[in-house]
Amino acid sequence: MNTITTKKTSRSISTTSSDNTVTQPKIFLIGMMGSGKSFWAEKLKKKLKVPAYDLDSLIEMMEERSIKEIFEEDGEEYFRKAEAKMLRLFSEKKQFILSCGGGTACYNDNMKWMNKNGITIWIDEPIETLSDRLSKEKSHRPLIKDLDDEGLNNFLQKNLQERSVFYDQSAYRLNGEKLSESAFTKIIKDHA
Ligand code: S3P
Image (cartoon, rainbow, N blue to C red; front, side, top):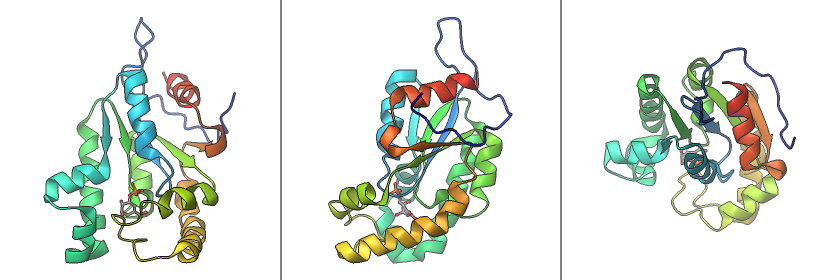
């Protein structure tokens, strides 16, 4: 099995129908910027036939402006409130795969809330991978857009260290190098 599984929660959240399709997974994908949360949400959506959402995109739709504009015009604190509010709308949803923002787990008791309302999976890619990916797509990310490569690397090191305490509360942690579709589906089916 190519997953590293930590602290499994005892709650049973998803169910499996007779054709083995997972019917009610409530999955929160968390982890650093550039860890591939949106990529995996899309992949799992196709595999499991479960709707996938991107928290940042939903906030942008609600606010009718980009995340970058929200940060510039109203600041991070405003964004974090909007993020927590949008996240909590998922209490009404029966099944979903939600790709969270990199900071979602770390503010407003969101981690606690997610653990009560679904299965949290931390996608844990190494700093080098994050750095490589993000150096090519910084411009729309307000927290890193002005950093050079060295600055980005330092930011990621520090940020990961601070955030690990939250990410570490997730029900599952998938090590980036061993990530695979079957690693996710195994977790979800184990919860059926
Ligand atoms: C943030 C990550 C971003 C977005 C915002 C803040 C963060 O999401 O929510 O720019 O604090 O790490 P992605 O992880 O999808 O880039």
